[in-house]
Image 1 (cartoon, rainbow, N blue to C red):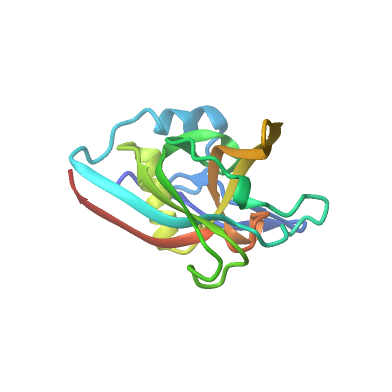
Image 2 (image 1 turned 90 degrees about the vertical axis):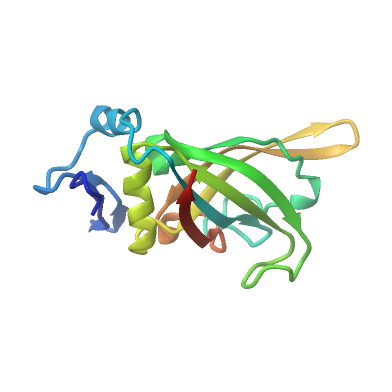
Length: 182
């Protein structure tokens, strides 16, 4: 739980996983209240960061989705980091590195290693607490692929932080997180 009393919890309902933001009194916040937390400053002077596998070439859990082909990946940094399906920004992916097969543990083929910096907001602090609690540990990178001169090219439009089991990319996950004085 954050000093402000908010937290993210894991709720399974009729086979679906939800990770809502709740108050200290157990009330689920609606979209407007979550967005307001993203505009509320928290802990200025502290940099919160994540290192994560953003994607690899494993078959997504949804068999209708194509297997990522990261050889055609083009870096486009920075990339927005958002909280799950809310689409509310909580930070930015500042660096992305394309790693060769076998360079990162428990990945298939090439992998994208990302370094992220969380915003100085209450919502980002809530997300960091949920990462530390093991609730939010997965990522869904929205990769936009299109044909260009020379072949297929993919760019990441946004990266979503969420529960790992609710993620289409089974190996995308938080590797490390921390904070340091700004």
